[in-house]
Picture (cartoon, rainbow, N blue to C red):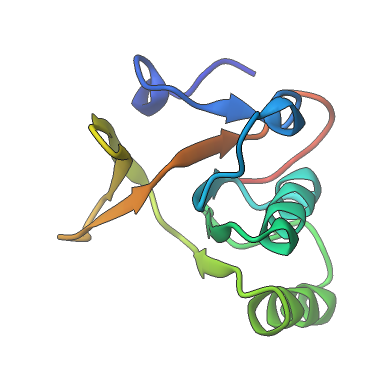
Amino acid sequence: PSTPDVLKGVPYVTNEQLFNLQTLPPRMVVYGAGVIALEMAQAFAAFGSKVTILARSTLLSNGDVEAREMIKSILEEEDGIAFLEYVEVSEVTTLREGLATQIEGDVESLPLVKLTVKSGKGEDST
């Protein structure tokens, strides 16, 4: 798929580039909540990054509701992953210390070091 307009002009990596990073980002925001996005988030949380997942709807939106809630609970409680669901990212800004996302309707920016976006192989919900 094409790059969302909100990401044009700011640095980000896709799931295809993620494991080529030379240093571990202390904070990472994953824009998307499908299978590949959750896999990347869990991997980097296990490596030690503080991970937040931004989802336009809910994680695994096409999946079974009970399974979705169980997966979310495990990722939150065991891996420390934070979820922001039903959000629209209205702006991503480059800062000296990294990037910041402005979530529509939210007055605070979410500071991050690395933004990860799922690239277009197969189905993935965001």
